Amino acid sequence: MGTRAGGSSNGGRRRNGGTTTAAQPAAGAAMRAPDRTDTARDAQSGLSRAQRLELYYYMRLTRSLEERLVNLYRQTKVVGGLFRSLGQEADAVGSAYALDRSKGDILSPLIRNLGSMLVQGARPAEILRQYMAKGDSPTRGRELNIHYGDLVRGFIGQISHLGDMVPVMAGVTLSFKMRGQDRVGLVYVGDGATSTGAFHEGLNFAAVQRCPLVVVVENNGYAYSTPVAKQTAAAQFLDKAAGYGIAGERADGNDVLATYQVTKRAVDRARAGGGVTLIELLTYRRKGHAEHDNQSYVPPGEIEHWERENDPLDRYSRALLASGDVDSQELAAIDARAQQEIDAAAADAEAAPMPVGPDALVGVYADPPAAEMLWFRSGVTSAVAVHERPAGWGTHDA
Ligand SMILES: Cc1ncc(C[n+]2csc(CCOP(=O)(O)OP(=O)(O)O)c2C)c(N)n1
Ligand SMILES: [Mg+2]
Image (tube, rainbow, N blue to C red; front, top):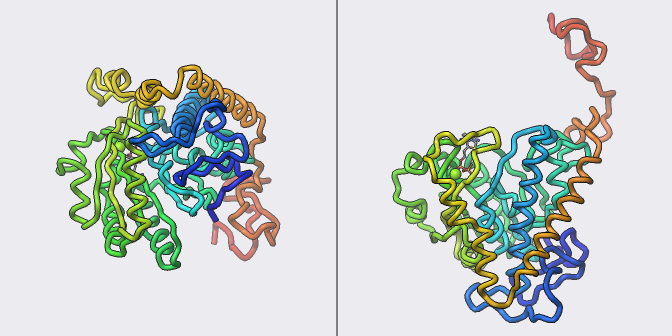
C-alpha cells in the first residue's frame, strides 16, 4: 500500500527523493514555468523549486477550501461544526510533506490538519461532500467533518478523543517495525491533548518500543478557551521529550520550510531506527475552536497581531519572491488554480445527492443485509407502541 506513482488522485508526484515527477498534471507542480530548472535544490530546505511551489499550492488550497466551507456553513449547507486551521496551514502542510508516501508512510490528522490530508491526496470535492453530509461522501453522511481515513492514501480516520490517536499510532508504527517495513507514522496532537492520559501512555509505549513515530505537538495557544499557561507548568512542550527519553525539537510552525525540515529530520531518524521524536510547532489558532466560538476569551489585539505579523501564507510568498527564482505571476497562477479547483469541487458537492436511509447501514452490517431493514419510524405512531421490531427482540413492554 501507499505507493502512489502515476495516475493517483494528485498526479503521482514523488517527494523527498530527488526529482519531483508529475505523470499527470498535479497539484502545484504543474504551475511551474517549463523553462526553469527544478532539479537545483534550495540550499537551506533541500527542496527543489517545484517542491517549494507545491508547498505553497497546498497551503493556498487549504485556505481557499476552508474559506469556501465558511461560506457554505453560513448558508447552512455545512450541516455540522466547522473547524478552521486559519494561520496554521504551514504547520500541517510542511510536516505532512516530510513523509514519503511512496514508502507507505501514514499520518493521523486532527481537525486543524486539513492541509496534511490534502498533501496525502484527499481532494477538495470529497472534503466538501463530507462536510455537507452528502450520500457519496466518504462516510455517506454519517459523519459531518473530516473524521474519515484512507489507508491507501496514508491518513487514518481521526477520533475526537484528545490524545487517543497517540496510542493508536504507537500500535500502527509498532506493526511497521514488527513486519520489518520501512515505514514511518506521524501523529498530530494539540497543546490541550498533551494533558491526557492517552497521550502519556501512548508516547511512553512508543518510546520504549522505539517505534518509528513522529509526534507533532501543535502549540496554537489555546485548547478551546484554555490558554497554554493553564495547560501545563512546563516552560515548553518540547521539555516533555526528555521525560520519555526521546528526541525533541521545536520549530516555528508558521514557517513552512522550517516545519518541513524539522519533520524531515524526525522522519529520517525514525526510518533509521532512531525511534520517536516529539516536535513542538509554535503557531496560533486565529479562529475559535469552531465557527460558533466567538473567542471572547482572547485578549484584544492578539488575533490581529498574528494576522498582521505572522500569517504563514504571507510569510511564505514573501520568502519565495525573495528567493529570486519565483515571480508573483506564478504565485497568482497557483492562487487562481486553487480557486478554480475549489469552485469546481463546490459545484460537484452541491450537486451531490443526500444520503438515503440504507446508507446508514453500509459497512456496518453485512452488505447486503441478510434480513429486511427495519426502520424505527416507519409506520409507527408512538415510540412505545407495537412496532416493527423482530419478534425475537421482545417488546418495549416486556
Ligand atoms: C478527552 C477529551 N476531552 C475533551 C474533549 C473536548 N475537546 C475537543 S477539542 C478540545 C480542545 C483541543 O485543544 P488542543 O488539543 O489544543 O487542539 P486545538 O483545538 O487547539 O487544535 C476539547 C477540550 C475531547 N474531544 N476529548
Ligand atoms: Mg491548541
